[in-house]
Image 1: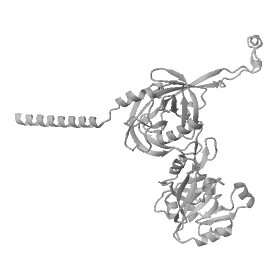
Image 2: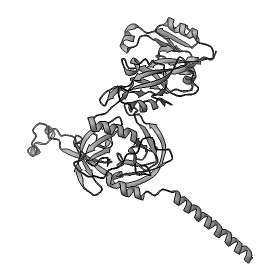
Image 3: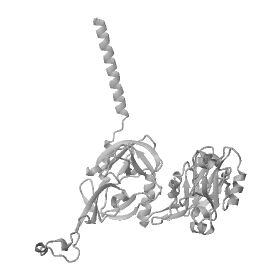
Image 4: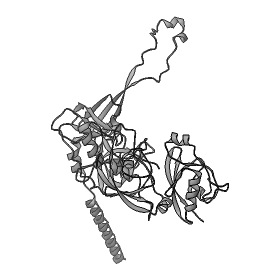
Length: 470
């Protein structure tokens, strides 16, 4: 009995020692952030924004509704003056030059009447807004100060998924709070309200909350790899989905704001969409990839360089284009006037063209955006169509089309998602401008094949893949 007890104690002791060793080994592998926090915090700032607002939410009383005995206590001179109140908001930022340039988010300072910058040693400075760029959600400020601490920007392209990262900021007004996590993904597309998509966001699980906006995201070398910009939340607080603007975008925007006070980015003048399985097959692609051009801006860079609606861009300036959201990230960073080789799939064949990238100013409304005759029986496709009148074509700015009047249930067209009211302008490589050209194009289609069909639906062009089952 004694021997068994002794053996059991020995086993327990061995297990405890093993677990302790594993815990120590794990602790050794975890990063130590103390040095980064100590050296970097002095260059992180708190930004306090004041916006004046007219108080218009209080109901105004008609003087005629005031009883006569009380009316003399009120002196109306037309409408009473509406008092003003200051609305305060806060964010974060960081110093990038010894003479006072500071990076933050555009949404932190947008509409500001005054901007106050508070340093970690409690010094405060009024800040000038040098320039803003809503498309990237970046802003550049400057304060009148010298010999300030600064943060180094990392070299672009050195961040890996799974890498440890660190954030410093003022969430909910709690100054200089530190949180850490890992890079969850790169190149995330979060289109703006205008459906623009120029920022390949870094996704992390770092705890980012309101007030962290504009603050730096660090790697383990203490370099800034991004600017914290957005969170996904259902509660108003962090749920482990935060997004930062990568340093490659920050460098490009900051340099332009510092030199010109505005940002000009590369522009192609195309509307693009993703390639699904059916479209990939119809264009002869081995798998869904590339960005499909559904329309071109008249006299835009793409149109002037020979690109066409229906081209699938698979490579731009030597970079592979895996999906439509990837293309604006590449083009937007290019200097206007740059000539770039573009590889496209056209009529199932690969073709390379040289395209001169145009310029898109901050105030321009154009954008390289990402969107996501038949017989009575409908013929081979199951469509009843009608030629679009010339005056309608002129109003829509297109050269020719047929309008879908009926889609036969269970037909190839119905399976592809074509609906009544769609305008068809292209089938495979055949332009469609009348019922006759439609019939001719349909007749040429091979059985058991997939073909691209270009539509205009509610004013927006798009391609779909149509598969014949006969």
